[in-house]
Image (cartoon, rainbow, N blue to C red; front, side):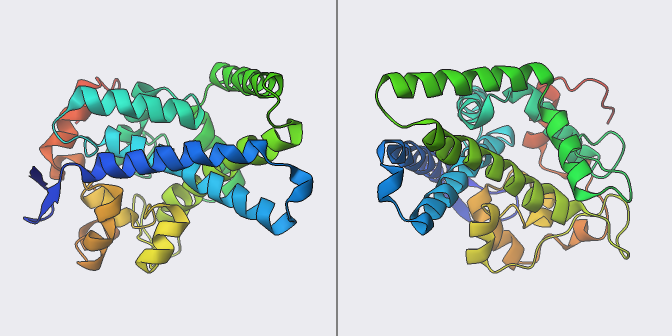
Length: 277
């Protein structure tokens, strides 16, 4: 069974998005086996490599949920997207799907403006921008609950004789922190930062080859293409980028009205308050 991407007449297998989601989830779960390995028997470079792999797979959980927000994980299946998206965001960091989707919808409607939850004022330092970005998606209550869940996971693992505090910090907490920085750097800061020649609301695509774009952040760096065609899934962005079809949004902000109707319908269904067309 095939569906057609909004940017092209080329058909795309419907199973491809869920297939990638399943691969990412299974690899993420399999990588948890590192919690049972002895740190003393591992070389420092092996530990660093496993941390990097765990961080990359953790980022993949958010990327799948992001596709769900745009309706491209299960095209035409609103409830499936929401259910799977909430599961993946829960595994990623107990993020509420509806709140995240609402904020992300505002980001697409008002990139680089005051109503953009990811907005930063001109001259903002990256660190300040990062904390504002985190605050838009995490409340203090959510963060405290996350800390409580982390503690519960640690106690459970230790009661089962698996892992230790260093294991947990290295292979669970640290990958989550790295993942958050990775998403901010390649999905927000670099594509949306204002340079001397850019205008407010401008969106840039990073000029990375596909293999590096994938390793950097699942092609989130092809951000101009994503804003131009938000319902195109992450694994199809290199084709859109290669076709140079994102040029319209590199010169200014992308209006929601010019984007696929399915994305508009999803935002309306979420009842985004305080957002006018």
